Length: 552
Image (cartoon, rainbow, N blue to C red; front, side):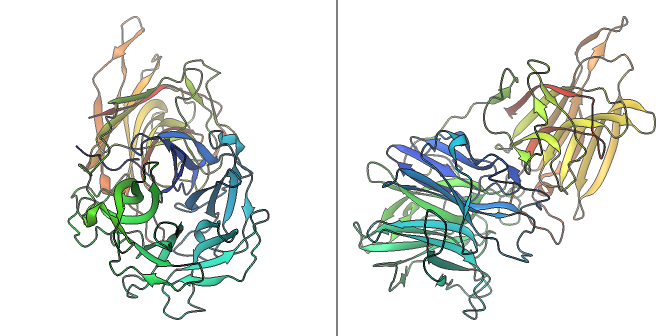
């Protein structure tokens, strides 16, 4: 009996982990989603709870017009035991986004002494050195703090590839560099692999093996992704590469059902066992390298040991699998998750696109309901539409809600969305049919390499219809299906029970892991409720009585 991967399902890439005593804390990337950088907690590496977000106010993270898959990249979480302080270091691609980088931003860090209180995280302090995927290493033997980050090095070292690792000593009070930035690591992979080093982490195991280790993510975050490691007796070197590199790589067999393994971080247990967390994907339809993973990059776990030569060996040097990973236990997950919007949101797993200008929802105007106040932005705008979104965490599930909404103009719309980015998103909603000016259920499906939109006006509601309409999205590995149900109306005009669910539109799951040429994709699928006035502020409220997911 082993454990099942992923340990944190859904869009949770670039995991970084830190143990403090018997508590494990893990963070992941959020890109254009707000709040930024979820903080997960566990006592056993299997059962994880979202306890907050490190970047949860505009003074920390102010995203305006941030491109899809721009935003917050690859955070690292570290704890300084001497000062009893947590450090969260990351980089914000605020407007531009790789691979079309016109400038490389500078990383920053925020701190707290109480990781349980998400409001205690400080405002950012910026470093001088540029780069993404930053890491902090506290060298307690020299009392120096080293920053490593990822940036191009071609002007310094020819044939260094697209990205290399840079290093500088820093002052943690100011973020100032104390030494010149130097190229610290260049990938040894062939140029066409591609040669690309990022996601650096440094570990001090001199008391265990006699070495400091540099762990890197290499070859890009696609199916060829891998983890590489080198070591030295001190930060000054000399450095030697592990002869068994890569230490984590499922890409040697592209028929594997787990691919893109990389961007790893090590952690030890209080009992002295070692594990590694890393991102990976679960391609679907088919479950190999030709498939797509609509949930995006997820957080996986594997056991790790140190061999006699002092090198880490992950999962006994066997492929990473979804089930029966050795050790620990398998977590039973609830079949139904539901938020009835009583007093407060059920948990901290709700997000908005980019940083909201102001709060667009409340639970007070109509107790027991979520009320959305639609704004001028739509889901296709590079902005912050009014909505609350959650990560899709299961491949087979039905997402449902009930909405009460009485539009008065054809630009007004509210409903349930399946959202990947501003190009690829699909809706089942309530609006006015522009041809008849009557309230109607509408489906919107976007598919194809140009995200072509198909809009279908479905059932029109009687003028005396009062009450909710049920909206549903059925998620399956190969496709998503939109559905709805309306209430029966008696002869005296009273509204009764729901009629049969009508499934009205499908979209292949591959379009929920797609991007239009010239753009890019680092995120995964979300679902959510939204309301929009489409360029005009919306005064008509959209009320939702619950939000639910149920495993198929």
